[in-house]
Every structure is written in structure tokens, then in C-alpha cells.
Length: 215
Image 1 (cartoon, helix red, strand yellow):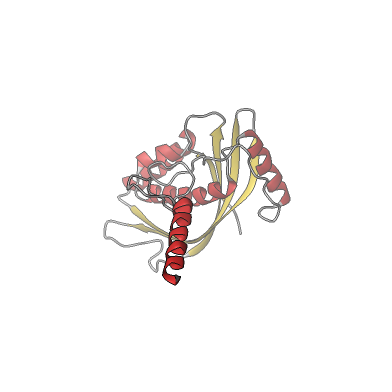
Image 2: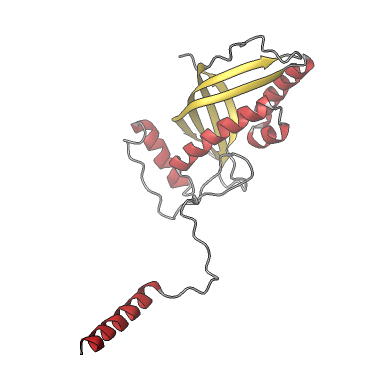
């Protein structure tokens, strides 16, 4: 009698699990728990992430009160904008742009910079190459903070402060650094402004202004 009871109980649990878990055919789409919900393009660039139709409100604990208000306003205009994803991608763009400048990678620079900023970078690279010099750069302890958001009629501009430790060395033909032979790291505070037009088919935020902030 006990064997029959346990058999019935086992059968009941089997059908309960079947109803909850279902079956697998081997054709299901693989789930990647680490995949971020954002558009991807080649290279490290700032892109517009996909968002739900109901954008969340940014809490003032995450940003200063003035910046939080600006972010909420931008999310009302463009519900694809996510400040946390933007900040992560802005740090990736910062590293990618500096690396591209160091390696004289004009293709990457043209993709990530506005025409006027690209001309400045290209001129600096040209002057460096005329002197048969090359540059090495290392970036550590990178932090980013949104300082301001300007919402214009047809576009948004986001100004970000990047704080990092950088080793920058200029190398001559003898493979020697004449400006930083000890390869020392120095603290850097860079202010960059990114811009994107509303309704643009391109998801990229272009770098439009750069300057160094005095600490």
C-alpha cells in the first residue's frame, strides 16, 4: 500500500514540475545573464541604449539635484536615454579615444569625434609624426561624473568630468622617452562634452569639446 502511495506522489510531483518548467527542444534561444540591454557597435563608443516606454525617474542620491533634473528632462524627450549606461559607455569612449590618439588611429577618431575636434587631434598627430615621435599612454583609476546637460532645439550636449591617473610618455627614434623617462603617473582632470542630435539614425554621442580642468 505504501508503495502505491509513493508512486502516486511521485507522479503528481512530476506533472507539477512539468507544468512549471515545461520542456526543452534544443532550439531555444540561449540566455546570456551578462548581456547588457544596449545597442552594440564595433569599438568602444557611446551609444543610445534601448529603454522601456516608461522611463524611470533619476533619484537625487545618484546625481546632484541640478543634474538629476536635467537627466529626467532628457529622458522625457528621449526615452532611450539611460544615464547609467551612458556613464559606462562614456568611460569606454574616453579610453578608446585616447588610445586612438596615441596609436594615430584616424578611423576610430573620425567615428567618435566631431569634425572640428578631429581636426585638432589630427593636427597634433601630424606634428608628432613630423618629428618622428610616438606616444605611449596608460590610464588607471578612471572615474566619470556628469557636470551638466544642455538640451537644445535639435540635440543634447552632456559635459562629463573624467578623473584619472595617467602615464604619458613621448618616445623618440632611439626608443627613449625624453619627457617622462621614469614613466610617472600624474592625476588628470579632463572635461569632455558629448553631443547627439534627436532623431539621429546614428546611436553615437560625438565628442565636441575638450579641455583640462585645473585641480
